[in-house]
Image 1 (spheres, rainbow, N blue to C red):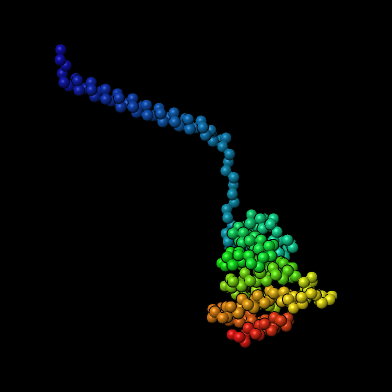
Image 2 (image 1 turned 30 degrees about the vertical axis):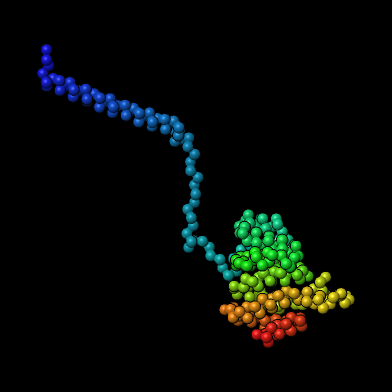
Length: 262
């Protein structure tokens, strides 16, 4: 017997409704299972460690200001370390300075290259004309500190540093350094700059040049700048004029000769 069409449609509707309900229940069951799994992994909230309390930042206005009687602590750099210890430029000190951030690794490598050149004592080392032509301000400060750290009797090494810095004269500090070099008290002996030799040393004429080698190099670097009509010509002329008042007759005479020949 053929069922009426209305009865067939009603049965189809019930089946579809039943399918939707089962799908919804299955989805809810899956969601509940997922939440239970997540809760099991995380654990109860009571077992969670409480976050560490961090105090709020102190407003700038509330921080105690430094008074005139409390000068700021000087920044610790590799250059400032020379006043603290005589071996401030040892390999270990350089490594420590790099690790602490007092000096960049690239600056430390340049200082190490300078030490290698000084150890060889080769005035014709190709690195002198190749590796020190673009010194940064930080590197120039380190080189000036190295100059101050060396013994005064190491005239050739001191002159080498002056030569390298003389190729990188770009700031007031650079020119002030050259003026300080030409104003240094004369070195009287290769064994002790503060004392004259006990007797006349062999090769007296060449020795006199060696004793003032850093000053002569500084004058020559200043002469090159003046001759090139650089914007730093007035600074270079100030170095030459400072050389005229040097306590060394040889340095004073050389400075006067350069100025006269300009």
